[in-house]
Image 1: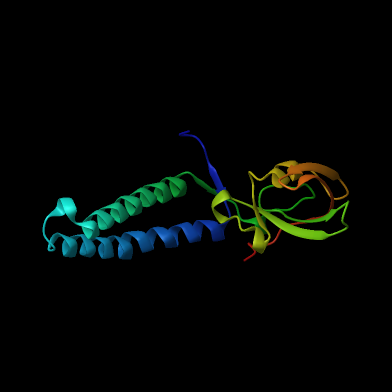
Image 2: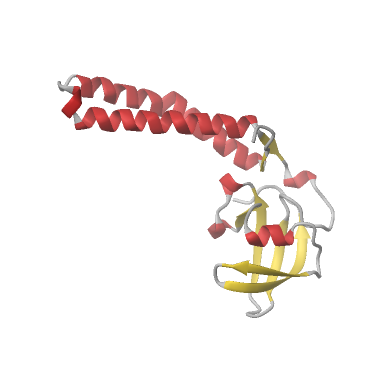
Length: 163
């Protein structure tokens, strides 16, 4: 997957940069201190503190590599610079559930920044995939964990990242 791009909004890219900085500049040193302290407790074979600190170090370093890869392969798309009437990455879409009549608003974002409680759905989510390329007035059918749902697209807009 070397040519795989990770689409994300500027807010999503900043969140990854912030986490990377935290892990490199703070967490890494806290873990190293914990390892040094645990070494002072004696026999490393039976030292639970040492094992836990080494495991935390491994997890942290793995996440650092993952963040660096995602940022290196990121494609930052600013929704406020987009326009048009078709649903694309970054679009904010107002939908109505044709069965329940309930209106929902979603912004289509990168996988790492999805948060359904904030109305942020991943570009890989079934609802987002069904909406891509559609316009206001279109009806889409989506297989969700709650069964098949039908939505009508009420509006498509482009603004800065929601939070």
